[in-house]
Length: 269
Image (cartoon, rainbow, N blue to C red; front, side, top):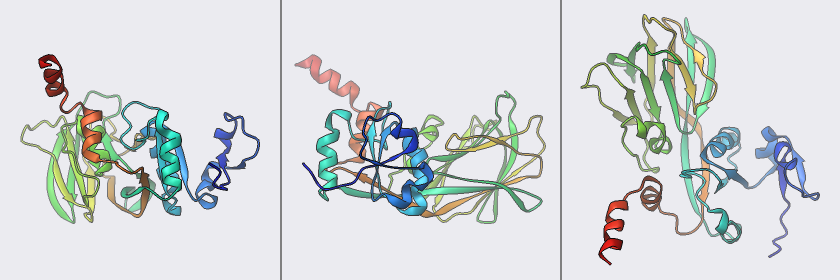
């Protein structure tokens, strides 16, 4: 069906697609000229697109060519039909917030980044625990020895934070999860705080240099006394889903819920 739409490719994608009648722009300008961005790949591809597009408020839809596909939720076999539904105006709008982080030395910002999934403080390749202090909204929470801390959005709660024992947060929640990674004290448990919370982590004496990364991007080292500041990013990602999208169905499918029960039913029949 010809809808009179003009396709636009970023330069890297254009080299892979044998289509001569499309506008080609650099990837960082895609949000300025496109009305809708279609991401073909895994959730990592959509995370990358989200960070680049969020400030333009350009809606994004994902076709899953990866493994789990919590964000890129359209199957390749259904891509044409589902995309046609979306282009005809039949879709669910899902607004996801991101986190922004700043690394400060003596009060000066030396590094910043944004994340749709999570900001992770970790010990890099070292097997030693790291020592840090956590403050939320200016209130001291604890000083901890652990392998690190995962600060996760609801979107990221089904990613790395889940493997660390964190809770699954519904995408509509205005909340942030803080998940300790292998803490020295067994009573250290995940904490869920409001989405407007200001999180500050101060690095204490360590045998190794702790590191921090946003959405698994390039990690930067932190020195003793450095502080990590994390809060909600001012812009949200507009994620589109075809009609019938169901977060709990995605959990059942991607996380294997009901698997034993369904196998039992098949055996009984």
